[in-house]
Amino acid sequence: MLRDAFGREIDYLRIAVTDRCNLRCVYCMPPQGVEWKARSQILSYEEIVTVVRAAAGWAFARFGSRRRAACAPDVERLVEMIAAVPGIVDVCMTTNAVLLDRRAEALARAGLRRINVSLDTLRDDRFERITRFGHLEDVWRGLEAAERADLAPIKLNAVVVRGMNDDELADLPRSLRARLHVRFIELMPISNEGDWARTCRRREIAW
Ligand code: SF4
Image 1: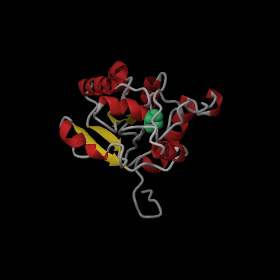
Image 2 (image 1 turned 45 degrees about the vertical axis):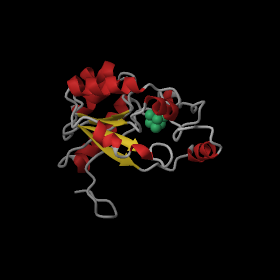
Image 3 (image 1 turned 90 degrees about the horizontal axis):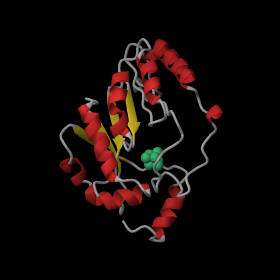
Image 4 (image 1 turned 120 degrees about the vertical axis):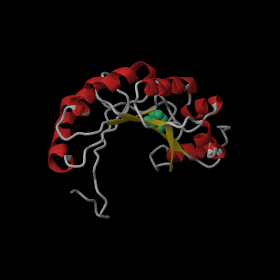
């Protein structure tokens, strides 16, 4: 059994498949986006599976392993490769869901069991402001496709920020279907946080 320094069991492996995203959330990225890494600078699917095999064979095999990923081109192939690794009992993906309506069925067929979806608001206008240009209806379509593909339970991750969406704390769990589990996430201190805080102070974003 593998434990961290606080005695907690480590029973899952989390892998970021891509540095790319089709949204530009204000607390995550600058408006112009970031410079994407060259394909040669990130792990290939085959290299990722090598890491998964090593982890599953070493410490995770008895407890299963979960894997999370953002949507990336041809990610169904990677899901299939990982699901086939001996010792992997559960494959999960984290996504913003905007492309999920086209891919949920294929991902489920490839071996994906569950998804986590990032969703901070139930308001169309606010979603567009937070993500800079996203459309909430794309997320709803993705969630419906995930339900049809039986990717369950579906967990929703909501980053809660005072003044941005804290007035929806009660609405988020209440307004969503029972099969969707809402989790509130603390804003992570990442590099764009300072820019965003300054933007909010200047009141350039009216929530
Ligand atoms: S918070 Fe998630 S969905 Fe938003 S820009 Fe960052 S990676 Fe993309």
